[in-house]
Length: 100
Image (cartoon, rainbow, N blue to C red):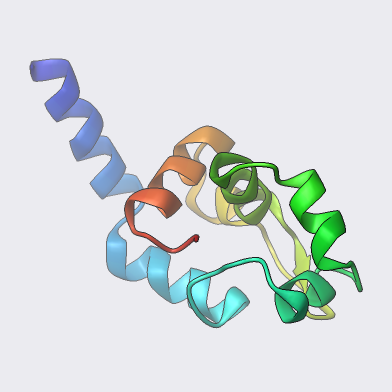
């Protein structure tokens, strides 16, 4: 049980909810789901192309965690900002229900 508690503490410490939500919404504007608008903002892609690339929620979460451009804007990825692994960020995005 102690290891699980330590992992949770590290998650909350490294990726606090309010700060992560602030960064996420500054890039993606709202909870992210694949639709025509969001797919287009990923470099003019089609919904089908983005869904083929991100076949499940975890793949989409990884893409959002590592993206460095969206809607013709360039920025540091969430993984770089928070200095965490892609997998840790993807899991945290899902925990906070920022990805549908």
